[in-house]
Image 1 (cartoon, rainbow, N blue to C red):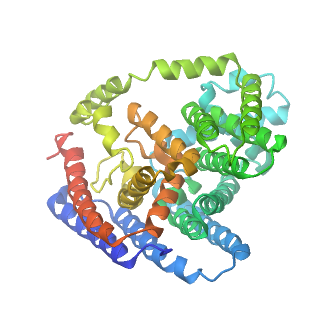
Image 2 (image 1 turned 60 degrees about the vertical axis):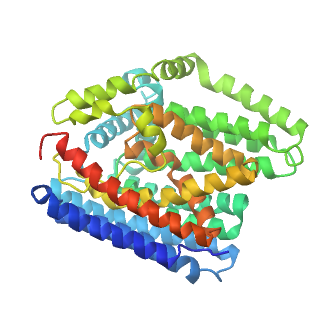
Image 3 (image 1 turned 120 degrees about the vertical axis):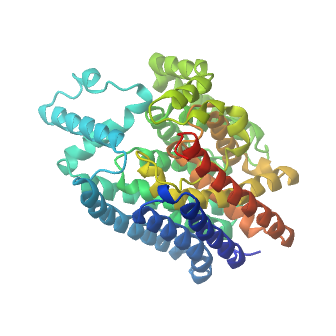
Length: 469
């Protein structure tokens, strides 16, 4: 049983990426990415695959008691470094501290500062409705920023350093979850892969809610796993779990619903030898009662609206096709297209299209996800065929449940909306990597050919759909 990303796979992944950059840059010369996006992609891909091979072996003899600390400190150092580098980069490009396509970031920042003013005046509670014009599922982050700005006197840098802490903490939680679910080797590799994942690092320097939302999601699943697998029932732990999950209703309703459904599925399917009937009934009743008090009529209405709007995907794709600068091929996309690809998309944007700097900067991170999704899928197939999925039903149902919702939504191709489950995808990928067999190498080669063709096709699609070629 190995405990690292095999070198033969890392070499192939990096080589294919470099060849892709060269071919796409030559074929679509007029639309070659700017140097900064080429550089970000190369650094992201090379560092992820190289250190996913090196660090697990280098840290193999670090005691468990010290490994978590080492993982957290290293993850934090990487994220703090990126926070300061990004500040210099954004200031050089835009003359301010905000990111590419920073409309949402600036709006959240504005709401946070308005909330800070209300807190200082003592009128936050009275003017709550006027301050928060957003739906409930988007209110959590501006409230959070308002309190952070209240503490840090509107300091964007300090806010992002706190994000770096949450990002590093997420890596630690995945290490603990992976170790509990699959063993120490899988947990260590999962933690290291999360530490190195470019898309998880990127948002630590962005004024968006992804870092906090991912942290709360991983915290919920990690604590739920601990509750289900411990011998005794502790009411306070369950209440804390429900509180954590309830916070996510204020970040993304679909995500919160998925988490609670996954928890109930886990309670139902987990063997009675692990979770007794009495414990199942007590936990279920406590969760239902707390949710009943916490959720309220407004949130129920929003959940109902979310369910009723599940057929809006086609309308959204039509709008994307017809809007100014849109892609005319977008109208052909549907859940039947997204569903088979949902573990792998979005593909990497390696061509220069105005207004899509964000996706170009993350081209390397998205490529890493495209490649590692092979191992995520392999893990799920292995667990399904062996019947071991019942032992890990919480994480499996959470991952698959959220991605099913994503496949049916208008945001299936949006990289931001895949963030909450990315750490879990990496955890399952780590499980597959630690249980590799020789025959899997052949399947990986086929996968890399498919990814190669898909990446070229995707970048052609982006240009042709806009009549640029």
